[in-house]
Length: 574
Ligand code: ATP
Ligand code: MG
Figure (cartoon, rainbow, N blue to C red):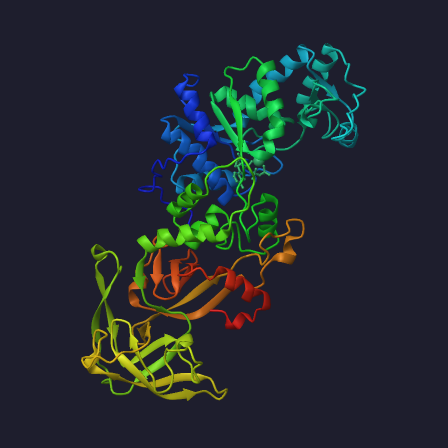
């Protein structure tokens, strides 16, 4: 894939919305509790960002912009086993592409490993943390349940000196993975399970993308997150609802450690989308097991996939603004996202003609060798977009689906004896159908009416259909990839996602024909193939072989398409 992503000219405007988090921020500023709002987006670099992250990015960076504060990009890199440099690079690229800039405020939880370690020793010295030798399984069992309190560890009453000694030896790499952990000493009978002596440090002999082998113990998410917020002076630490029950622990650390500031955590509902899986675990498996071509496969809900598919960043921002921010979890219809994509593309995409499944047309009364240049508008609503010349000749291609030999009642396009308008050109009438041995139409012999140039008949006669076409002599061949939903179930079963995969999510049309202007297409410049949808050039293109992706169809045929998928004869999909 192309790795350089243009960020210039793409900065997200401050699109203020109103929601309970913005209300809290505003109230804090109005009351003088906060002078400058500081937020952060804290991805764990264990996968690519997806459309759910876009909601969090727009919220955190958006609030900072709207209230004149700043937003940090902070990698939550506390688990070296799952984290990779590739993900770090992809996350930076994708946040920029979405239109946001962290300026010099790029941070890593790993930047704070030494300070976090120091605070852990402080807790030990204060009698508020201890080294536990129980196994992972024993710790789990002794934690209790929602209805039963937990049991104190037999190691809970170790002396400060013994704890300090063991913790320092954990750091020195003396013990194998899993041998011991450091736990906070809070309350094994707490109603909130997160307060039952949570794990602060675990032993992990693993190389870290940034700190290498300097550390053999790593802090837990809970121990790292709030303290990192405090170090950076974060005022509003915004996260998703599953962390609501962690907030008392977040506050406990802030209250019990000599941290430089007092951040607060606020929770909002994560984005869930129909026909879409946003679990990083599942997305990783889709890539690893080859269900898709990679993290940037255009069927993936990742920002890299959506970008490659041709979705403009403005469409993502618009979608996030429309769905708003709430405190209750819900499921958003993917149709809402598609609405935002069409809105953005309709405004920006230049119109072109492309025939996806070509059927040859020969105009018998058009002089052999003659070529005419016709003027075609680039955008119907935007005269400033100008026009281009398209060439018309005796041999053309039209869309196979625009012809029916035995038309059904409601089919008004081309059939033997009927007349249709060729967009920007002439009326033609089908006179004869030539077929191959299998009985399939391979060529239509037609005539044109020279008096209808430009698309109107001087005698006022009407035609019921206008179809698109390309000149056979001038068209360029291309591969076109049509994407259908990756999952057939509105709410895919995350545990057994493979069963819900759509076997027809990718349809490759190997021999599409495009008007020559499309030779100049660029991956980040969407186009509309008239009557067929919005498309963009794929990074797989080479000068000799262009590949286009369908970003989205022109109309919302989603529900219908999915119903069709279920019964599906893939060959008949269009
Ligand atoms: P993991 O299971 O690896 O923690 P994650 O999706 O939570 O997965 P993070 O990298 O921790 O990934 O997420 C970074 C930020 O994005 C977090 O603040 C998280 O709350 C937010 N986020 C993740 N998924 C969504 C979502 N679907 N909607 C809104 N925000 C999300
Ligand atoms: Mg997370």
